[in-house]
Length: 209
Image (cartoon, rainbow, N blue to C red; front, side, top):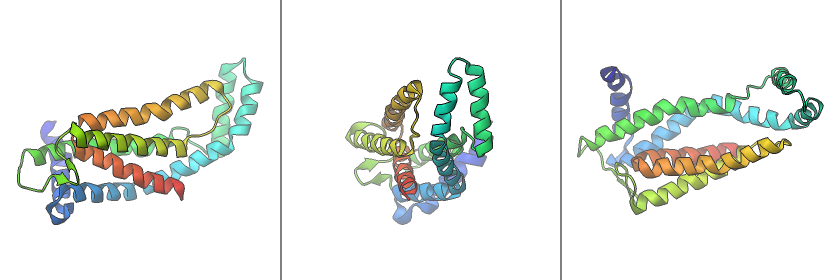
């Protein structure tokens, strides 16, 4: 299984990072890789943004259902799913871009690790970072930037709700996700954090327009 993973993911990622590392800098390779991934998943991202907007427009009807079936949770769930179906909305659609990127994150981690084990292939220093290292002052600053951009992206894409429980959950997630990705950035090679940061910035631009 390990050899198969190296063949289909790690080795190709290693070669892609080398090819995209303009001037021999790994940082440029990661930035260009991030842009390529975001372009590839753009159709899904666009669908996600449209679903988010449609979900926002459904909030008044959702509020009516919650008032009407407040004592019948099963009926409320059935009517809610019926409403989603009529509006052609997949409530889990917003997770697809993140799920699809997960193998890329894992392959990128092992690709960077392979670069670390093969010194002299590319220059791993980028701005104030050593992209193969984690933690330290540079990693801490990168973690803050990742967390901040994740918060902005979450804030822009958060759907309003009239349900107090959902409002509370939304508030928790608004801070939980940035904190989680900030911690991940702090504990893993900075190259992965750079991927998160660039991906968030691109996401913010897409969300804005």
